[in-house]
Image 1 (cartoon, rainbow, N blue to C red):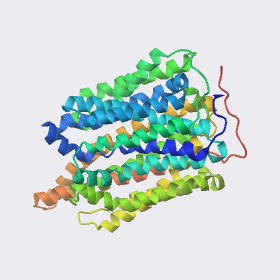
Image 2: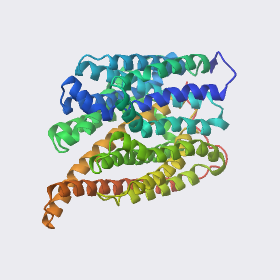
Image 3: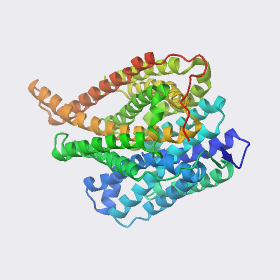
Image 4: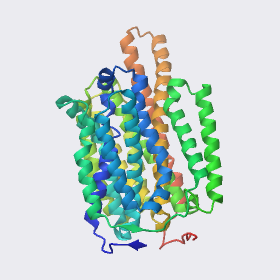
Length: 482
């Protein structure tokens, strides 16, 4: 490793990482409830303004596979610094946008910088932080990455009541500047290796393939999951990603080193991490939807109802990092899966007049599970990755998370629509006459159906844990070539 700074200071590094990660993730949720205001301000339709949200997710997912190459070329400290500068600049430009098109473009560029930030921060942890403190470092990283979307609706609801929508973007500027200064001063410069060349065919296939799939997932509900556009994009996306895998396994200088999947612990834990991600979005997406669409709560009131569970998650994330060396990944993830299942299954019993306390406790139980499962799955997936490969492994992890989040939201939306129609028909046949009652009941029942699916999905983590034997010492790790 080529370094300019040999002394590793844990807390200064984590503070710099925390600011950037929190800011990046917070921006993914604060803007959603401002869509009606933005539609009115720019005189735009929802179908057009929705691309501000979708475009951000697409850019975040598409940029992730490039992080391994860019981090090797510029160093991860510099890449993280450049990403923070870009994120701060494009946040300001979003606030200064003059029409819908300019807002969407600046928001997509902000999303690309956000994708770089997430991958860079995880990579820096596994390349710079000493091994004995990585689990605690990952818990702090998870704290910023998971609490930010939870408090996003509360914060944005309050901010929109106090000021204009511009401040949802301007708020990022001073925090971004602080993160830039902290990163420049506190994170040491280092380089693991320098890639010889950019794998252009790999870049093209992974970007176009990811883009095709993410657009299909995002628009599948509005186009129809059986429409020719959705099916064509899915087929093209899968075909291009198959070509990408073949290219990366045969190239001398791959864009992403897919040989990390030969490390059994990484593959199994990444699969479990994917299930935890789906569980995260099940509650994060469905619960606010129920509170606002069925119980007609304001965004601020919704955020306040969800705030206690967010605090629980904030307290548990560092604790999980401390417990990890003592309990190990298998025990902690098993406990987490049980709590996640219990919380999601509890939330599948919602009805139109459900008490807020019931929703609150369901989310608290779910978040206890997320606190126990997320940190161990993230840490264990990267434990046996050689430092030279950590950038590639982090890029793969973040790419998977972005694809799964887009997929989960799209599938959940489609299931709610289809199951609502089924339940509406059943209610009409049973003799219910009030149209509004039928609408609210069928919508609530469809949300319950999706909660059940989310609960069953997370249980699939148990068979994977059985494949993972508790380590007695470090297992053999593939050594990087070159």
